Length: 194
Length: 150
Image (cartoon, rainbow over all chains, first blue to last red):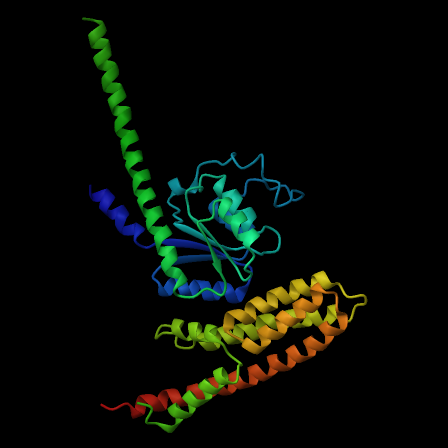
């Protein structure tokens, strides 16, 4: 019980991974998030984001950013279990190399798939917006971002908090289930011997 | 409230930047992010903007010296430049950026060159005005504290 309360307290400091190739926009986003009491990690590319999330398995220098179809499932131990917590990913859409959409697809095909992803862009192109939403993005925000946009973000973070709690419950449950299975086996053996 | 002349002058200077169309509401967003923990945030962002966008200006300049124009590349540079300019609320600079991109899309080289000259003028003018504004703000700051009624 104490452990769960502690975990809930930790989760109130939401951690956002912000991805943007523009140094100005990174500075702004970082400030926006910090002023709203979130923890922030900023990276300047999709590759750096994947590296941070422990998803950069394909080290082949000749592979392009989009050739991820066969490797998306080959993730080793998800970093969540090692204590790295990311409650939300905010990514710029238009970046050199890996686009925000590519990053979105990689994340959604990984062990981090339940982390909400918000895509940002300075351009209001309906086809791009729907493509990102269909690709699993929670929201598409127009840049430059404002403090009022952070209200929308809080909704997704609260959603991830609920999910994280569920995950922790399941972990506790699994430990207990193992015990139960052992007990049942003993019972069955006893029953068979009757 | 604005008893001290410096504070009032600062407010007038700030308002004129908006009235004359140099800045838009995004600049206000920056101001709203400034707090005691980061009292120079706006100036930091503007300084960072001029430092970072300098390389984009140079890239565009060099690209405009190569004939024929690579309109895709020019548009790409300007897309980045426009984004940064928009993020700090640089209204006139942003408008010129938009126009430049339209000329890129229609393959109008002369339009690009002309617009870029105008853009550089606006970019330089804004810099001077903001430098003067921040200097005034620094002077008005301590004075405002001294004049605050006890």
